[in-house]
Image 1 (cartoon, rainbow, N blue to C red):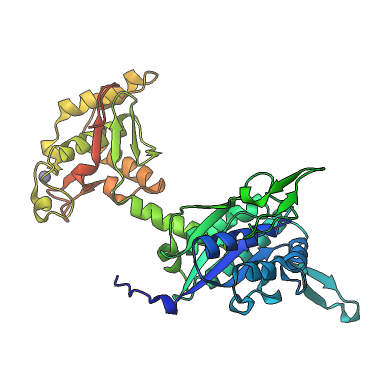
Image 2: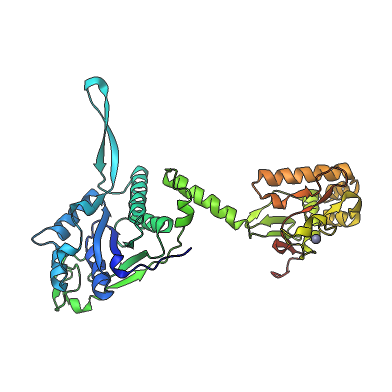
Length: 404
Ligand SMILES: [Zn+2]
């Protein structure tokens, strides 16, 4: 993908924070971003509750004593250059249905949440917060700076999730770190240029010289391109996450390995155990061994179809070796039975075990490459084997066998 380098004057830096009872984190983070890091933030959004919105209005946006204006005055920013007003306070709402008497019609109204306390509140928070971040990251000319410092823990968690799902290469997420006497202090909103003494507790004061503000950048995985594959369909958050997870699992399957553990008498693919035991696991191990022994025939090799080492006719089946494998994979409880099953082996039984093995893998949602397939289209001269890339087959014999 060719990405055109953005010229700095084309870029708009947006700051978005979750807040609860401590609107200070907004000015503290703005101080770190704008004064210390010299990032020209031109718009601020706050995602909050009804109570948090009141605090923002009173403490930050009040024209007479709002700390946003105090901050701008202190550091010489034009308040008009930072878009942050009533419309930038995004309050989480719940749809409440009220029955109207006349005609019994139902009207829905939006009710602002005081706090995030119930499962339903959380669901509203998730949908709305993720929707907001999705919108803010829609414009390629913006850089979105997010803060997880304020609000309830769930708000921080969803902020991280939102950035994981929608964040782009240029977007950033932070937590603001403020020394203890200043943290949540109602008298402290940002370090002033000139030293001030502010009250901490009863009869104690502390100098703002000690108010060192740090921004910790929170790294996150960017799944945006996986999410946007499905953008046409409006889905709930849970559905979106499920879709992304399924896509990622499918991708992971491309390099996950089949591990056959002889001493544990089990096999797994990636981190999932195969639902296969005893004689059927012995059959899988038999073909996995042949395939693993022929690494020159990786998947996709043109000669694979004709390879007698990877794929065998039933007449070539090494019955003695299969019996050994049956003994290896027999559980202690049913050892004698499994061994006997191996002994009265014939072509019918072979086909029956193969069918059961393949069915169990299919039903378990494992990829087709793990099945024992007939590689020739005709029934006569059928040749059986495993398609799985030999480099992805890992045979662990003996309990102390190291990785390779
Ligand atoms: Zn081969």
